[in-house]
Image (cartoon, rainbow, N blue to C red):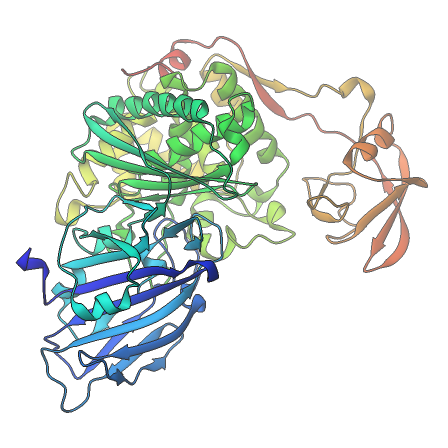
Length: 610
């Protein structure tokens, strides 16, 4: 315990003002200092979410004090940095404490959220990093973390709980009726990629292959969480985890934390080191809600798989996170696309998903794929590189000019897996390539210059298992502006992809318009929409040939039997009514439904490895 006292950095947070959704924060920096100036920077993004979020915008009331409780001047410079000039008479072995409050109102897996029922805390969204004034070794290690929370709450993190003495000035920072939980992360990486959830629900504990797992639940509306449904979820999680372990081996790290938030509609997931936060609508926990339940299992599997693909096998650019600047890689199609594809395959192999689940989910993805047209304008490598300006900032033309490295990456990798199995006559699949690359370049399996994945190392792995042809095949899919050849890949597997248009006998008319939520305002246009040149996003659809359109359902009825006819469409554009003439199209038939029993390649791809 003596090693933890002195010469380090102690990060503290208090839930004292939870009813105001304000988190009190303190950073204690002990001397000695190697400069007369101390500088700190607030991280601008969080690992796993490639978007500059500027969490400093939620900060208020910053001040700094020394060991005597006297205030020290804090200078703001740059948009996310502060500077503290140490007084001339300052004792170099003294301590500086920086205090401020953070507004925690955004309910998202990427943010802090605090209210009277819980705290979801992300260290890079909470504490500033020291950038000048103490040695780099002290900046990168020997951190202590203290959370003060209501006595009725219990706190969970993937960081190890360690008891240590809290100094008197920090005790003054903590309200007396609050309890404290303390952690000591093993270095900067674990600290920045940590997560803390504190609420009144006890974590559910279970084991898989000797590894300890925790499920920490919280409902945003304080609704009762159905116990039987949670038990069913835990059983499915065990199946999925076992399938991951069958592929990669039982990991040396023996503990994993899943935080699951249940909401009125918000959904998302974010991976962390040995942990994840996932967020789904609370009705997803009801197994009879088939699509939502399927998505919950997929989301858990996706974030869990990131323990290997992103957390351990990383882009070379992410070996040492710089959270103050954008860090680009052109391989996000691999790190997110493969995680999506293989995460769902492992759900399927484990039995948590049925054949019908995989087919239904692929149908949903193919519908999204075919109603966009971004493949003509952006390739996967560029979509990855431009994640910082595109993925989290969609605009009205995004579907027509950009692609998602998640969706299009997953579909491309489905094709690559099929080609891999054909080329190697069933010898290898993409899962084998993932394991090979992780073993060669993962941070837990290799050292120094061998760590991290780049294009060359990916090609070397492709060549080792599949020869030069596989390198050429992947290069085309990733660096050319083309659609993945889904139907060709299905043929390799011995299955067919057909249209599932149940209304094709009704001669259903089609406008190729996507509306905003609960409105008839145009949000964007689908590929080859007949309305693209006569309307614009934001216009509101009022009527077709004088017949009032009230919602999507009424529009479909009006368009029944109207394919390949001329229609007069009444729209409201910036409040002004006008009529436009449109040749109503025929609703497209896209190949979205997988049919057939499949061949040996197909059966091997979905076969359990346990």
